[in-house]
Length: 155
Image 1 (cartoon, rainbow, N blue to C red):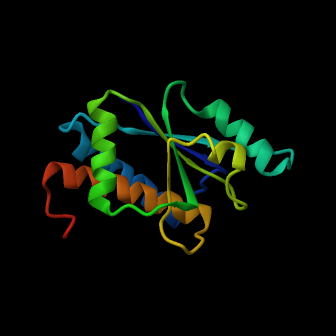
Image 2: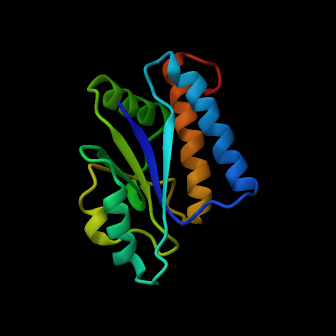
C-alpha cells in the first residue's frame, strides 16, 4: 500500500509546514505497526496561470497509477473520524494505494472532482488550501491512532 497527498502549491517554511511535518511523522511512527506506510507528499505548481484546468492536469499526472482518488472538496462527504479511519483501513486491507488530492485556492476542476472514488469535506465552510493540508495530516494521524486503539481520539 502507498498513501500520498497531492496538492497544488509549495508549502513554504512556516507554521503550516511544521504542523504537516509533525503530523506526518507521528503517522509514520504510529502507522508502521499497523501496516500503514509513511505518507508521500507530491506538490504541483501551475506556473503558467492556467487556472483549475491546468492544475487538474498537473495533479492527474502526479497521482500514482491505480491509486484510489480521494479529493478534498467542500461538496464532499463529512465523515466522522472513526469512519475516516475505517476507510483508510479498507484501503490498507485491500492493498489499495490512496492519493488524497487538494486543489489550489480556487478548488478542484470538476473534471478531476468527478473522477474521485471518494470526496471528503472538513465542513461546509471553505478552508484555505494550506490549512486543509494541516487538517488532512492531523486526520490521517488520528485515523492511525484510532486503528491502534490509542487514547488520542476521544469519542
